[in-house]
Image (cartoon, one colour):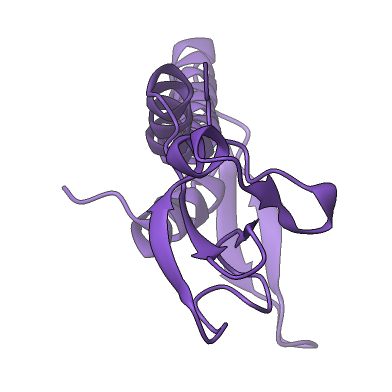
Amino acid sequence: MLLNRATVTRLWAEALALEWPGEQKAANPTSNRMSTLKRPHKSVLEVHDMRCARLLATALLGMLLCALPSSYLTGPVVQAAQAKTEKKEVRVWVNTNSGVYHCPGTRWYGKTKQGKYMSECEAIKNGNRPAYGKACGSDCK
């Protein structure tokens, strides 16, 4: 059985719609609601079995609902951990006239008249400086 939100909702509604032993639903002629009529003769064992079934259904649905969001979090957490362990190498645009390099996403990245792309570490080794004093964040040693 595929467990998606619609299935969980349907199962939850079915679990809540279970009748308690000793109760019978009957139409009330004065309103549209169903009234509950008590039947006096039900064994204690039947009452206990129904309560256990209802408790089990509620517990299973609760665990399922708690487990769904955690499965969505495992992917990004693993990717973030892998990104931290990898060496970060940023490609920058170096304005060859001024000796200033620009980070990706900034105004002058790739837009000055003269320049070339290179890694940030390479740009620093060639004597270039970051635009506005802000480095891009490469792990240069």
